[in-house]
Amino acid sequence: MVDRFERFSFAIFEVSRYWHKLAADEMAKYSLKGPHATYLTTLYRYEEGITAPLLSELCGKDKADVSRMMSIMEKKGLVVKESVGKNLYRGLLKLTDEGKRAAEHVKERIDLAVELAGKGLSEEDRANFYDSLELIATNLKKLSEEGIPS
Image (cartoon, rainbow, N blue to C red; front, top):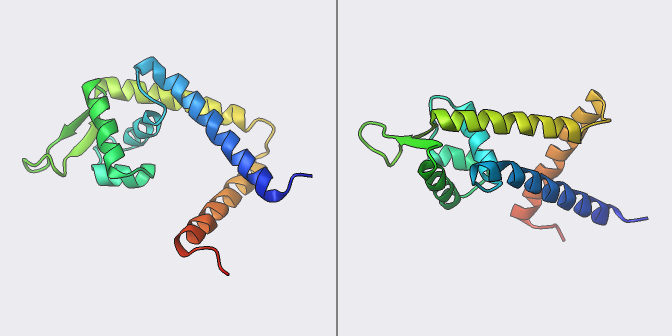
């Protein structure tokens, strides 16, 4: 039997690989890359706008990535940066009307994919799975910061 490390690693890799492929397929309709899906859906939750640092934190991406992705989305007319007190530096990123339509469409597709991916799981199984996954992620983060004990 495959040991836990191999099983865990392979499963995480496969989930990530297939999820990124699905996201890329959906975002190609907008001439965007898969990671833009996360930005679109996150921006969609913040109708009043959101700062780039907060978007970076919420999406788990560095500020340079946020800047690049928002620049691309601005050029495509999906996002606008509005100044706060005549200052664009800490401006708010907002979806345009076209961006909102794209985000709604992507969110619907994501919701469907998540539903179909969890086919056969009971609500209890699903809750246990997410609780377990969050605990594993938290523990791995701590290990990555502190190192594996001797």
